[in-house]
Length: 147
Image 1 (cartoon, helix red, strand yellow):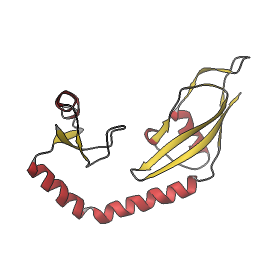
Image 2 (cartoon, rainbow, N blue to C red; image 1 turned 180 degrees about the horizontal axis):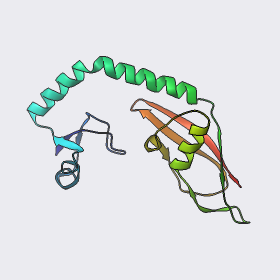
Image 3 (tube, rainbow, N blue to C red; image 1 turned 135 degrees about the vertical axis):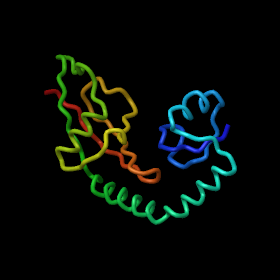
Image 4 (cartoon, rainbow, N blue to C red; image 1 turned 90 degrees about the horizontal axis):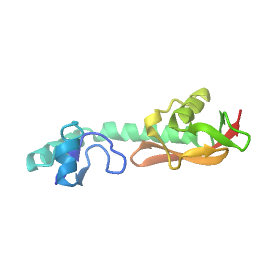
């Protein structure tokens, strides 16, 4: 089934993308949650017209994302966590702690845009990806240290 996404969905696509999904996923989850609509010929025409009208707004959004990415280049974070004597963290470090550390440095980034590939359960060096725009992503190195 072809659908038009109304919002960014990790692993599937970005807002206004026309994607192919299984019927059950589309009918039982995406459409009832108002995350997508069925891609009928009429809906595709409306989408194309809306994209044409929003082209200059999208260019500004992308420019803002690139400016934020340039500001985040070279930023290295240190996140403190309570650990055991062996270096294992009590709990884990996730995107919320990374967003808070960035905010302390003066970079206001929504935690939903931050993606950490692995579960962080030990002290060490890791990398987080911040997806500011569908074409703009920044990798932020961070170190987890014992408090």
